[in-house]
Length: 139
Ligand code: CMP
Image (cartoon, protein in one colour):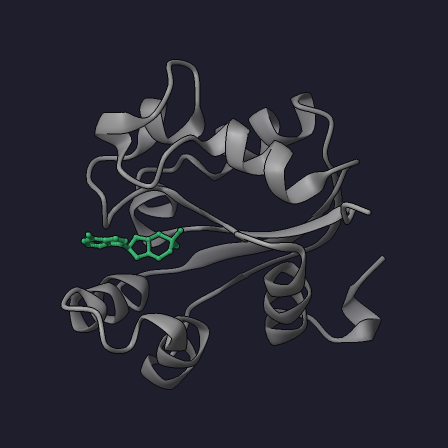
C-alpha cells in the first residue's frame, strides 16, 4: 500500500526569493495537508546528514554549501499516495526537464537550486520526517 506522508523542504534559493508563501499555497491547493512545519537553517553537519546518500557524488560539497546558505522551510505533508503525488507537483529535479505548471518549472533556477525537496520513497519520507521533527511537532 502507498503511504500517505511525504517530506518537503523549501530550499534557500526559494526562501531567499520570498517564495515560501506561494509554494505552501500551491501545496495546499493541490490537496496536501500540512502535518508539521518549521523554518530553520541547517548546520553543515545537518545538511551532510540529510544528504548522506549523495556523499560520493561530485555535487555533494556544493549541495551542502547551498543548503546551508540560508533558511529552509521543512514540512510533513499528508495526502493519498503522497510521495508520488508530491513529486508530480514539484516536477523533475532539473527544472529544464520539469513539466509546465510544476513548482520547479515555475521557481527553480538550476538542477542544484531547484526550490524544493521531495522524498523519493515512503521509506525515505519517514526517515526524513523524523530527521526534522519530533513526535511533539507532528500533528
Ligand atoms: P533533491 O531532490 O533535494 O535531492 C538531492 C539534491 O541534489 C537535488 O534535489 C539537487 O538540489 C541536487 N542535485 C541533484 N543532481 C544534481 C546535479 N547533477 N548537480 C548539482 N546538484 C544536483
